[in-house]
Image (cartoon, rainbow, N blue to C red; front, side, top):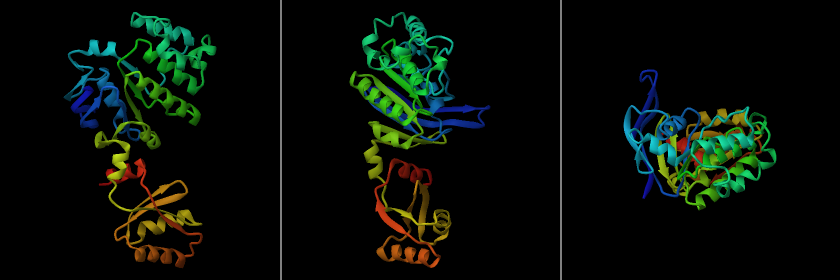
Length: 305
């Protein structure tokens, strides 16, 4: 059974000159933690706004919790929780006032649904009298999630919830999502952080409004059908230039302290030829090793296909 079904959704801006979402289709199972992974400008926010009935698509259809996004938008809004990428709560209201306000909108109370948000709220409860605008990034994130959950939604849409948040808060946030999933809530989360993709059950890689691949993180990695290598030397800037003009290099991308490369012809002889070539050009401390691809490697390969 699917909680979200998207069929050929298209959304444009500026009278069609800018295509934000381009013929996108996918389904999300009931109780699934589904990730929409892609860089800024990929179309994630536009797609979420369509699915949460805040924008109308030019083409296509979608069903959310059994309701059509156009004909049944009022019913959908009662059943979903939405946490936009930009902090959008009332910054002049306190933590407690924001929660009570959003609870009132859905004819409920903080006390009635306290058990659902308890694990999150206890972390910000000591600051319940502080204005929302004075909270740290991590605290704002937790408050926004509490407000999105206060009416016990069946489906939760989280648009880039960890952008601009410190590493510890990011880890805590994903732990909270796992607990919410265990309660049976269907969760759709978008993120530009490729490392967060592995925390989802299934992911859709999106770029320029198009879906590149949909699968489990492990299966997407397994579909990477060529050997991948990490290489470095003492002169990394020169190394990048050398690799990009070397005739047998198929792909070359910078990843932290290494370059990730693949060969057109991949043999021990060709690898040694590359090392010899770099040595002749005064590169030292050369390291070349075979590695397992990451989601980011897969994304870059799909993007360039």
